[in-house]
Image (cartoon, rainbow, N blue to C red; front, side, top):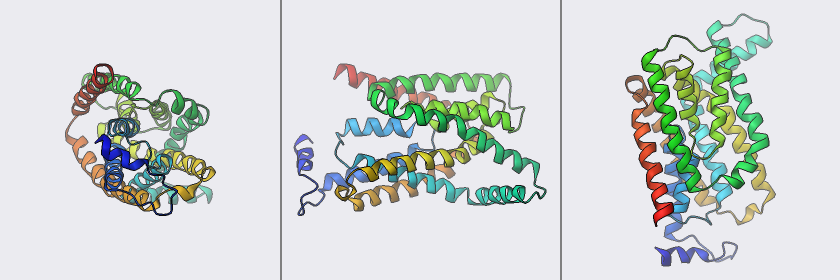
Length: 291
């Protein structure tokens, strides 16, 4: 594997350079990882960090890949919830025209707006610092471990006091604060918002649906910021064919995962993700300290 990886040391800017087979495999793997983990409560950023470290993927146009993969999975959730998004656009337009709107749709619109603010504001000030100081496998392992106990607590509280309230603007804001926890690599954005919604009295399905809709503005914003950072670099050195392959894989995978997870969460709990997070964090910690 080390010998094969050394082939990738060929400078990408050379005119005769073409990607080797391992780089194509890496592109597909990263696309699959992003597509599977973005909307499951297991942290896509954390998994990308782990996979890059484990497979020694450190020269695969990292910023370009992260940018386009985020956009790809955002487009996937927008396609899946296209009717909901269109309905919210109509609500906003009717509000501007001072026309009557459905109160539940109005609440959803305002909850999404205020729920986006905490992560957006904190991300502006903390994202660069966190990316520089907290983007490592061992930090991811710690956050996965803490996430598991957060899910346990949410499920315990949900068992003692089943869902008793619908989405409100205030609950939307509090879910937004839970979403801000995902600035830390290894803390799942969808997991923190779903568990947070459950703690606030929402059903698992209602919290999951709101979590997916809440993902759209924040992931679009994060993707746009990454795109601006990419433009500051020499984008001519990026192999856009491989980036496109990874993004298509991420988009298709994300569509399937969203559909699967919403069906899953109607019947089951977060406990499978508790065990997954505990096992993965233990494995990463073992590799870090003992190998």
